Length: 156
Image 1 (tube, rainbow, N blue to C red):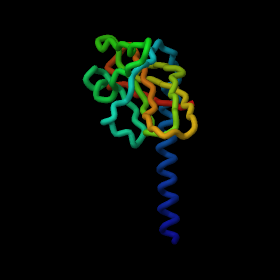
Image 2: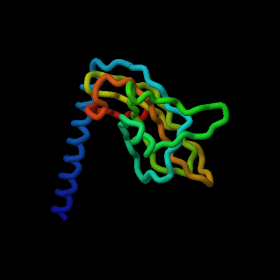
Image 3: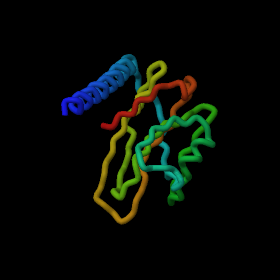
Image 4: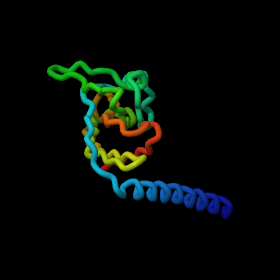
């Protein structure tokens, strides 16, 4: 029993240490971070062949990878937001598939050298008979190699 308690305590300490490291990195990224212009990508859907059993955080820098996750939605009076892949890249948050209508709304994007902080809000409705994959995606101007950026996703 003591061995089990020791292992459990050790696991808790390791998890806390990892969380503290992330918090330190986030605090460091927030210093000097400034709000940047972003385009909220609308009139897209998450493709049904994407594994949506868990949350996914994406940094996409080309159209081929984007099309592997998203498709243009046919909506009356609205066209999908265009992305200029030569000048922009996309960050996105995909939540697990759910049977509750869920809206993910970008609130703010801040950037500091080597870091992006993406703040979003999630609003959930009541159960329905259908399922969907909630997501939010924004296009940002390229200032560096997007794959070299550390992106922090913060749910408010």
